[in-house]
Length: 188
Length: 188
Image 1: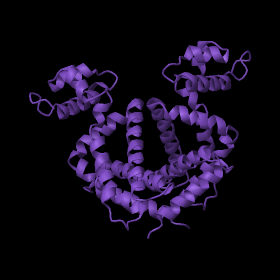
Image 2: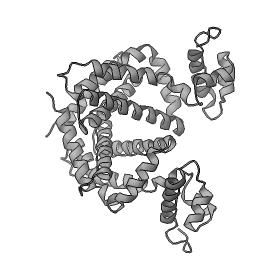
Image 3: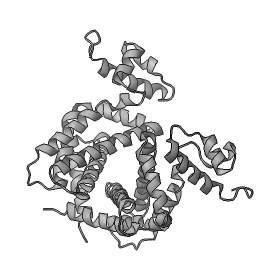
């Protein structure tokens, strides 16, 4: 990041969310986002490949965190518990950003192309988690199933976290979702 | 569908898949698809909203079939079993199309914007399945968790079905995935 633009990335992210919420995603240009953030359009495209990516600035952090947590889990831990625990660690990336996450979710829900991008990010997260499980010696289909299930409890937990009037943290919401899923899948 | 264009929809679907496989998605126009199918470009756009939709012609059928199967399940059936059984019924929509499904999957895997559209279709399927469970009196988060899990076993089962050198049917592949998921999530 260039020195004369302190936190350009953060400012672009906030400016984009404001403008998308005010005017709608389709009615906002990258130039306008750059202007509100006080940087040039060229700087915008140095940080983000397109108008959608600016809403997914945390995806890489989140994925790296989850992959590291899977690698660091005790060898004896089951695949589902490993991936569930790793998803809970997502809290460290997102915990101070509940209001941001809530406004961001509303913008994404309003636009199918943003929903598509979000789903691709989640699918990429599932793919990376499955790969991290395979590196621990988990075979397929267990690795893929456990990773997809991890993303499911992350999604449901995340939705509850941003929706909740209570003060439950993200990790707690994800843990609850995993417990509920386990109860649901327990054979009758 | 107009009488003078018998099975225009089916011909467009096959022509699109051929051209996307031969030239790539980005290098193919709707006009070229229409030409190969022997219809006008206008006819193409009467059937499909854009260049991506032509690969998802079965999505609505699949979703309607799953929703109907959920509604028809015995009242005593658990949410996971209901949605798993409903996903198996997908076989009735797709069973004669394994080769088509295999070629289609290769085209989709090669293009991020097609992957995004596919993920949106699966998310829409999960949403419809969750809604069908709610109409049976299943509360959230159980409805959402069971529906997402149903789509997970559909995806993993589908991938195995198109990959498999064996002759296992789609329903069998989905059932196996559900059984494996149950074994994985059973508490240690």
